[in-house]
Length: 476
Image 1 (tube, rainbow, N blue to C red):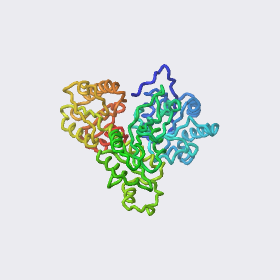
Image 2: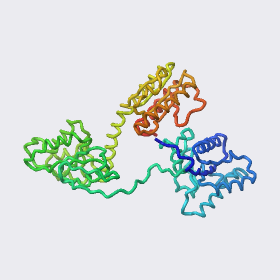
Image 3: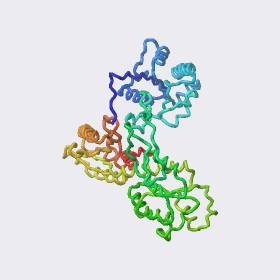
Image 4: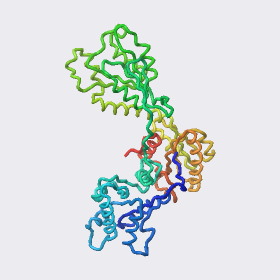
């Protein structure tokens, strides 16, 4: 859960926003950004806050650029035209003056720019970034999604940049680990240790079905990625590996079969299909996820056994070993996501005047969520009793005929109840949305921060919100 920074230990960053006075809409958009930055502890400066500087605009701007910790440049076609001297004579002189000052500052620090940051309100305006800043990270801002706690927003990335709070922190340097050899029964290696040197809890168990191909590299990669790896004993004629394989299969979340040019020799225990086909049959019968791989360099014409030739070519990933590692992690991420989705809770809170709409919204959320548990709660029961101690992964308030005061009261009650529940589960504040019961209902006079606004029949918007609840982000 995100915490507020202690103001006593935090020196506010001073941020100047340079932009073009091209329209009332653009000025309002810039002011909204500046207001939000100020509300979250950043000393944002725009000319709209000080319309009559006593020293005059040129000296005021020069002083602001020198004193600012960060200068945000809001690039647009108009800004570029004025900054590059392509505007009509006498128009946009302020931007032209600012651009010259900024170029001078960049020239003085040609190979080190930590202050001047390009900002766009439309991604298509990327072409209008000045040449000196084209290689610099830029931020696309949606003025309706100024949520610093939502990592999917451009504003959150910009806020982290300004306040020097990285999204991903480099972990502390740990102790070297001991890696066990892979040619042992039920081999386990996690590649991660806790601070006291004990093995970390594995993310899951992978069964590397025994093969004639060396799997050392794959086993090491999986262990270093935090997974337990099981490799059964080596095959030879007469050895009964069935019990050992079945025990490993019961623990595995994924079975990986690495295939080579040669099959295992015949064994009466696995006739008539052979050991490798038997492994695959057992995994399918146990309803396990299976991933099969072979090198694309294998020449199938060198395989005399036609059945084996087909066996290593059907439903098999054929790619470079390094690419297969990416495929492995993608499949493991999918499996982990399926597990998380099945236990996610979405609470839809509504007034009894909007019951029908709430039922439709909840039904659509369940359909899009594929396993998300949707709970409908209304004003007849206290919110804290409806939520209880269950983790809250998403919140919706249905707004139609209930009135704004009820919505405002519900927002506060839901915040208290969800914070109390999620603290116990070490969860962050969940995604939140206000759902208008039907088109034409006017938006709330004061939409609370971090609450999305969705119309009940806007199915793509509901589907995107459900993706947030599932932890999958928002689809483009």
